[in-house]
Amino acid sequence: MSPARAVANYQSIQRAFPNAHVCYTVKSNAHPSILAALATLENAWFEVASAGEVLALAACGVRGERILYSNPVKQASHIKIAVDHGVTCFSFDSEAEIEKLAVHADRAEIEVYCRMTVPHAGALWPLTHKFGVEPRRAVDLLKLARGRGLKPVGLAFHVGSQCVRPETWGDALRTIAPAWHEAQDAGLDLDLLDLGGGFSAPYTGPVPPPSAIAAVVNPLLADMAPGAKRIMLEPVRGVSATAGDMILEVVGVAERPDGQTWLYLDGGYFSGLYEIPDGIRPAARPITRDTRPARMQTYRLAGPTCDSIDKLFEMRSPVEMKVGDRLLLKMCGSYVYGVGSPFNGFEVPAVLNADTLGMDLDELTGIC
Image (cartoon, rainbow, N blue to C red; front, side, top):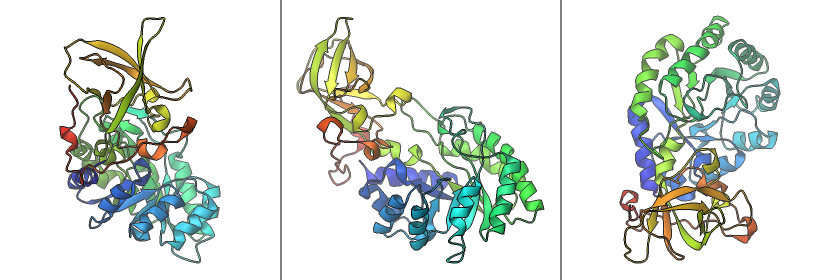
């Protein structure tokens, strides 16, 4: 991992949105080195989904006023821990959540913003069904929150993960605009708009840069959400994806009855590569122990466990691969570290700090 790369990515997004608060999404990569590097940035914000993430940030010296708790459904005990640590800004999208938050209204001024459902064209994973409400419902919930002693301050949306269509943010703004205007007409003083995540990583090819999203969003804000002074962003992969590569070792080679040659690696689905079946495919590049003649080969990749789900993808290698060779997977900085498990007794991947080792991730290319 390269914490310096995460910082550079964060700053690139901040430059594209100079008037917004860029909130690093902790769930994407909560390695202490990444959090510590970002925590040193002046005015850096963070987005969390649990009390554990609040505590991880507190260990890095991040104060609660720099934290956005954007999980719309929270455990009551997690809310208490967050408030204890100075977090006061929370997302919600149901009556039940209002009641959990209202318990703390006498301890602090609890600001709340309502998560809405929006179009998700161009996103690899839509998030519409799990969270979010329609415009009329959003206004009713904001009113209810005010009546329970909370301070309604805005709206939020998420266009879906790995969104490669900048215009989708424009579609989302047009969708939430009626609720924003109706809330203002009802006397609700909204000033916070959370544009969510969706910022994509170039796993297999070019993706829109943050500036392309800003070019869609910025001209619409004044009309769609007048008075929105606090613009929040939650760029997940846009910050962490390119901040980590993964190196696996070939532990087995076998030809199967269907003619496919399989490469078995010392890491796989349960090592954090769980997104591969859903379409996230990092570039795979061989690292061999010696010089070999060019000989294009097709291999089916699999992890080391005995579970049938522990399969990755097919790859073309310019040389024959052997036991003991290694495979470089590029752009594994998002989610891989956080979800790795010791299933079947295999260790989770060790983490090396590329910066302290004097390594540039761009120079890690394998033989391709």
